[in-house]
Image (cartoon, rainbow, N blue to C red; front, side, top):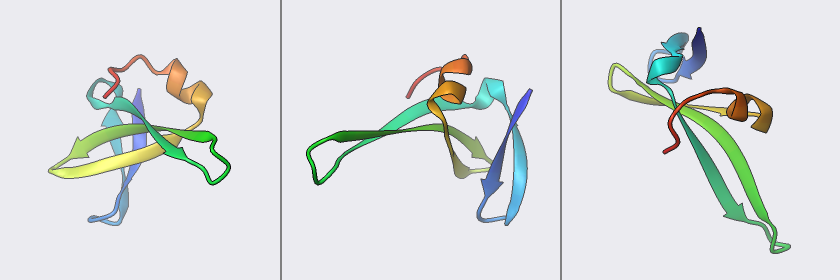
Length: 67
């Protein structure tokens, strides 16, 4: 199964196989002191780095290496 990313350079959606996708998290400190975590998938298409944000459930369901 493939994951759909949006390629900003080409201005079109591209399909990337799950075997080429990596998982990552982005953490930041909020003004109230809480840590916010965002979950994302990362891939590279013809030299262009692609990022797609996802829900925690989708992130956990994908069996991919974590960056």
